[in-house]
Every structure is written in C-alpha cells, then in structure tokens.
Image (spheres, rainbow, N blue to C red):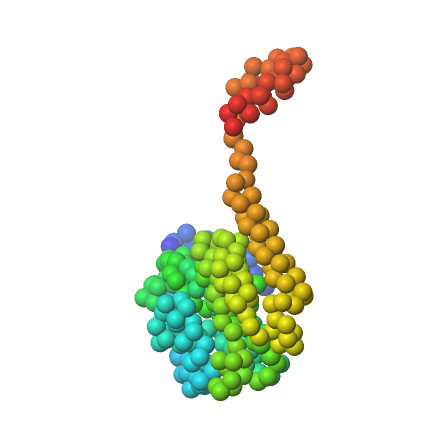
Amino acid sequence: TESKYRTRGGNLKARSTELGSAVTGSSLTAVLPASTSDKKSIVLSSESRKELGKQAKVTKEERRAQIDGRHKYLISRLADGIDLSEQHVEEAIISDDKFQLIEQFFAPSGLKKLIFFYQDVLQQKSNASLRSDGSTNSLPQKKLFITTGSTEDFTGTCAFFLRTSNEVITASNVSQEVNFGMLDCTNGDILQGLEFFLSQIMIPALKSQQNWGAVKEGLKNSQIQDFLYSVDKFVGTLSSSRQNIEDKIQLTEVDVDIYISNLQNPSDYITAGEYLPKQSKHNG
C-alpha cells in the first residue's frame, strides 16, 4: 500500500491510494525501518571511532616526545617489577587517560604517590565489529594502567611510587627522591598481599636500617623500638583478621518446606521451632 503524507491544520493525514480513503491522526510519526536505522548508526559509529583513533594517535606521539629520564626511571622499575618489556610499559603509559598524574607527581610539592594497577580488565578487540544491538565482544585481558586507587576494584598487582620530599623531581634526583614498591593481591586477596609486603619486605628493611635521620642512636632508641614493635603488632593483627575471614562460619541451607507443609495447629509450630535448630546444627 502506498501512503502519502501532508500537513493540514497541525495534523498529519495519511491517504491510501489502494483503499481510496483518508484517515486523520493527531500524532502520526514516520519511522525509518529498523535495518536502515541500525546501518546508519553503525556507519556513524565507525566514523566516530576513526576520528577518535586519529586524535588518540596524535596525543600519544605528543606524550612520547615528553618522555625524559624521569619517565624512563619509572618505566624501568615497572618493567622489572611486573616482568614486562619497557616498550610495553611505555605504550601503556602514553595511552593512559590519567597520564597527567605523572606530571603532577614530578612537580614541586606534587602528588605524594603514583599508583599503577596490572590486572584483568574488559577490553574490546581491535578488530571487533558492532553487533546488531550496538554491543561489542569484550574479553578480560591483562592491562597496566594509572589509577588513583579509589575508582577501580583492585584484583591483581599494585605498583606504586612514593616521594620522599617536596623537591621537584628531576632526571638527576629521581632515583633518590622516589621509592618504588609492589603489592601482589591476585584474585583480590588484599589482606594477604599487604601482610606479605609488610612482614617480608618492609619490616626486614626497617630493622636493617642504619640511618634514622636526626635519631643518632638508631635501633637503640626507645622510640624506634616502640615504632618497630607497633608495626610487628599490626602485622600480627592483620594476620589474625585474615585467618578469621578465611575460616568464617558457613551456614548450611536447610529445606524447611517438608516440615512446614505438615503443620496443622499451634502445637505443631512449637514442636517445629524446637526441632529445626537441632536439625540445622546436625546438618552443619
């Protein structure tokens, strides 16, 4: 049926040449066929992706030109710690949307910490095409990225840099002014990762420390001893908390329908109330 549309008095009238009659509607809307609309959105999306790709490439090359001795120091530490190539780390850094945090970390009185996560994230395949519903295929892949530590779930490896002063970070002082560390929290086991880091790395390093700055007595100083004792105590508490969580009580599900279906009067309910806790304990 061929239909023609024309505006009359603010309404749309549809005239059918086959039926030879007019039907007046107060709010008729012409809609493109679904296939045509989908194809148009896919074409626009493809053009947008190409443009975003060009912009990202330009941004990456601008950042690559900014790489100096300070960045190379961070890259080398990350590559050694996570067991990646320096080229891989550099590509990850210059592609990161939080790249500016590195510059803020280097600035005088800048950020006190710079954090990287290396873990599985959902990433779209580079050759993936849009489905009919607009979605794409995404698979979990290992990715190194900069983070503030407060927006993403932590499920893998954390690498961090800490400043030791408010001095501007330069290529000549970066190895003295910046400390590097890692936390392995594979599968999100943060307590175990923190416990290992403190007990196996930090405490041994502190107890072997010879220079304590203004404290000339070093390890013989009572305040230093109290501090080390507090750290030891904290690690002990951390270990106990982790074990309590791992050995948590697990309640067994009990099918109570077979008991409730046979209840007829108040005395039956009283009997069931006494019996079910015993049965639950027995099953547990």
